[in-house]
Length: 324
Image (cartoon, rainbow, N blue to C red; front, side, top):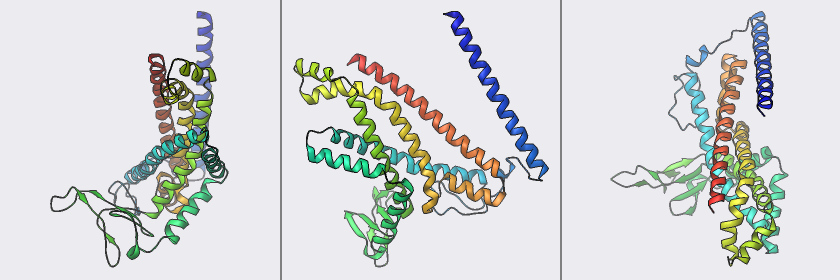
């Protein structure tokens, strides 16, 4: 056994050394070609003023701020849409996956139709369709739809209550004015279209992940739960679901990572995410290799963090299954 471990360790070390050597050669060749063509390289441009404005930013940003801060604003915008979309797609996809397993043929058929339709239409087309709906088919701001109390929807986006009201109020409530909705917080049409597109598209894949995970549990488990006197709901909650989670979590993490990467399609509808701002920086500075490297590094770090979180959650789920 010790000899096998040593051989495995040696093989991993050789592979790691070979990968490092290959990466070093690629960097050296790229640097030589750039120097031969008179292309400047380096990351010093990150300290220089960005020189462009960002139409929508979660972080405070001005064109005089550094390029590094502009990229941070783009990353914040990416996470601002990706994290809510992950939550919405997970909840909606779980409900759809459970609906597909329902004995009710109508409910099961509707869930299946949703999954098949959304999975087989390219995400880019769905984003463009949602942007058309939000920006063209909704009424203008002075005739906004009040979908709920103090919740207005129009071509200008979604206006909703927000913290920090005046005169000691807990919330700043939006109100319909003569020209537009005033007060509260506003979500732009670009943000809404991207959030809807990512959430609804990813929910179809999450639904299939949940359905497959539940069906992977042997049928004898549910029969044993019924034999012990548990109801179907109790059997599902205490027996089937904990076991299914171990099969659901790894592919669900992949879906969340895909959603985060698909947020880069925001450039098609004008939402300033990380990739969009990096493209603007590339066009202004000409530092293509550096900008692409930064984007790759950011998405690599996000993927590694997600993989670590998935492994931790899978271990916790295993202990939960044993205790239940």
